[in-house]
Length: 170
Image (cartoon, rainbow, N blue to C red; front, side):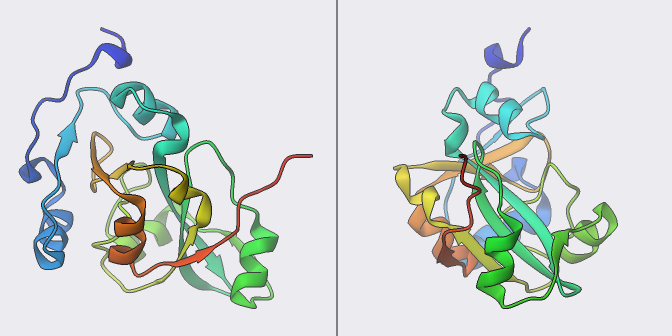
């Protein structure tokens, strides 16, 4: 079976990572969590499994800004411009966080990091391009689980600041 033919194994919050399910309850969010038999670890895999546009996938990316973790929410078809992030934060140096720092900061492995429900509180930047859609899909704390949400609600629940940090192509 190809990933695009996959159907969700279940559609309940219990399919989410327990920490993320608790965050949903704390935020008063009742969302459908879909779990797929094949991984949705990358934006391309997730879009194929869900059957949505690549830009409707939310990437939850951890960066280090002067050694401090920061979460950037970016659509699945775009790349983060580190110089724009640096400028937004007023940081001297911004770089992609190592896998161990991602897990330490969020409590989740790369490929399953949700936009909220993290182990520690971090600053959140959300690229304005996420608002181009009526709904977006993000990881639910596990590489096989995703959930759907209105982008404005996602940014609000994540405590994000809307910014323009998408890499521009020439």
